[in-house]
Every structure is written in C-alpha cells, then in structure tokens.
Amino acid sequence: MTLNYRRLTPADAPAYRALMLEAYERHPDAFTSDVKEREALPAQWWEKRLDDSAGASEVVFAAVENGHLLGVAGLCVETRKKARHKSTLFGMYVPLAHRNRGIGARLVRSVLDHAGTRPELLVVQLTVTQGNTEAVGLYERMGFVTFGLEPLAVAVGTGFVAKVHMWKDLRG
Image 1 (spheres, one colour):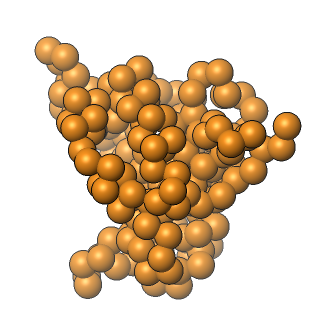
Image 2: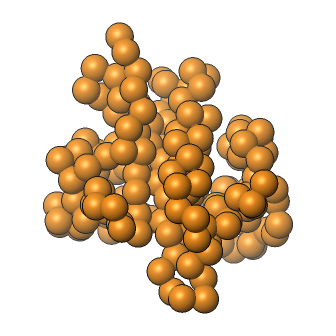
C-alpha cells in the first residue's frame, strides 16, 4: 500500500466532498462550515474549489492510498491587492482511523511547500478550535505561532467555541 501526497483536481470532487461532509458531521466544533449548508452545494462548487490551474486562489492537497483520501488540507491565497501577501490554511482533516501516521504533518508540509512557490506570499494563517491541543501541537511543530484568541467564533448547537489564531512567517 503506497501513500502519496498530491494536489486534488476537479475529478477528485466527489471523494473530497464525501470526506469533508464527514468532517463537518463528526467535528462540528472544528469547522466554521455547516454540514447541511455544504451538503446543499452543487457539484460545481466542489469542483471549483479544486481548480488545478496555475493561478487558482485555492488549492487542496490530499494523502491518497489505494485511491482513497486519507486526509486533506487546503490553502486559500488572498486576492485583494493590499493582502496578497497572506494566505490561509483551511479544511485540514484526517479521520481518526488514519491519525498518528504523520499524515497531518505531511499535509501541512504540502501546503507550506506550495505557499513557498508563490513569492508574493509572506504569511500563512489558520484557526484551530480552542482546546484542540493535538492540532495546536502539530501546527506549533510546523512553525506556527499563536497570535490571538477569538471568543464566540463559531456557533455550535446552543453554544459557541473559541478559535485560536496562528500564523507562520514564510520569510524564514
């Protein structure tokens, strides 16, 4: 069984959609997106997110084994003129059955390597649910630093969760 890491393309949209809907359903506190909202989106939305053209503002990387997605992480590049130096790591998800194999670290590395090919990018930012020490630890090991806490960031059920804001300076 060979584990590969690659950028997803529009042809991967059905598998990507299924994995992300699982993520939203099983971990509603970890994602701002709601499973019902995303479930209702047309196939074209998912395909557009996986646009594989050179200038795409979003890219998604996956760990793939025997044709199955074992985890994903994306990078969204800011397109506004004054913020083109920034990007956001988004949609990081590795199902429980595939954790503790280094997949998360390799996905973050894929995102950072891609960011490094875009000379205008100086920063990668992300948010992680407060209390998710496993994820915070991974991001810290990958060079991310906490810069703030957003209270009441995401409504979950009848309550709210806070988000830790982290960033990595790509200048070295």
